[in-house]
Image (cartoon, rainbow, N blue to C red; front, side, top):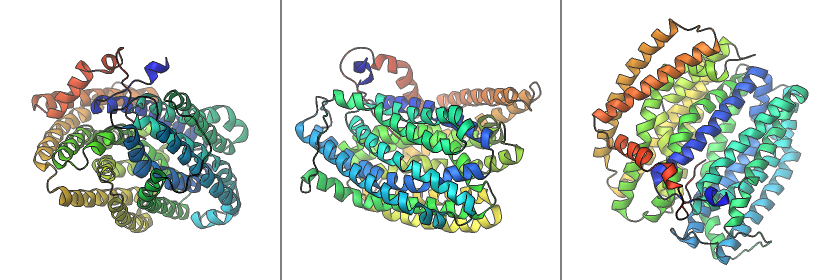
Length: 540
């Protein structure tokens, strides 16, 4: 069984498909989780408290874990094992994993302890619009949630090992178990303990996220041991590469904190609306944008300083992402009301909440193309050992986001926060593109524009059919029932997808033909069918 789970996947499209498939399952569970939360609590104080309580623990995780892994650990560790070496872990690689886990554990535990003590003062700054009782509850949830960055930190290092060995199967299972932990808390504990149970659900989910990956890394030969090397060249290299990335993530976290602060000053439930809409819109971003970026990262690292190969790899992946994201944009805007009603419309989540959330989601969707390709652009810089450029570009975009959130929030409320986010994402994309093009002199724009034109034509035709199907289905189903709305969404989506694929096929889209070949002729069943170890690629 473990041999099957540890299969290697070299083909980027197949690897991305596997990651996207598990990401889809995880995000479906995430939507189910949000539906249960919205149905139980509605848009109000409780979920505002829950989402605000994430901010400081998430700050620790993003700064210390994501920074180290994305910018430092994976490139260095991959260099130790060799791009195509999938044998047992060497002593040097084993020592590096233990050293990073030990350092991260010490730092996260220490900062978590400080955060536990100073949480009341920190949250008073972050949520100035919360009253005393609301603030006190947020503090209690935050203190419990400080356990999650420690567990997720350890888990992410193990996940980095699995990514480096292209063992994406088990890595992709981890987020599923994370959501299952929270869902279990909503089902069994929330009715008894209320919103407090959600904090423990997050901790349980983080623990499952860690435990599911341990056996696969153990099988690779890793054995933990205590060491805190100060002068090890690999550890120092990771620390050096992590610095700029950590600063970049710090800016993004400041951005989220400012958004939380501004939301706390708006109407009750504004923070909840922003987060629910953001979770829904991240569905296609995670499945397509992040999955492809993760899957291609090892290949980008291998050809980072071969200009022609890098451009070809970047262009191909960029076009593959846009093949999915352009129709997804139209779909989310055309079916925004139905999507929100199906995903969240139950219990205490009423029509007013639906309108606010769907308007916010539509504004998020405007920047799908930017949000989905920024992870790819950023990884090109990381592969070239440049973590400073994404930092400086991120700094500018965050300033734009904060200014926009303040400006739009005053007149548009919660949906203004989504508008500001989209504007800043587009600014981020444009700046990264221009800098990368300056470095490489050419990003294969001709082929990219040609492909985007085909995708846009196909999406426009598909949208006509989606609107027609919406009207026809609404005539024969009860649009006031969950089943009726879900039927409309499913039929409209299927028809739109079929039309889109037919038009891209008629236009001889290179991306459609490759997608078809990868799925039909080189599907996962064939990849996993006996033979040599075929492990994987991953994305979070």
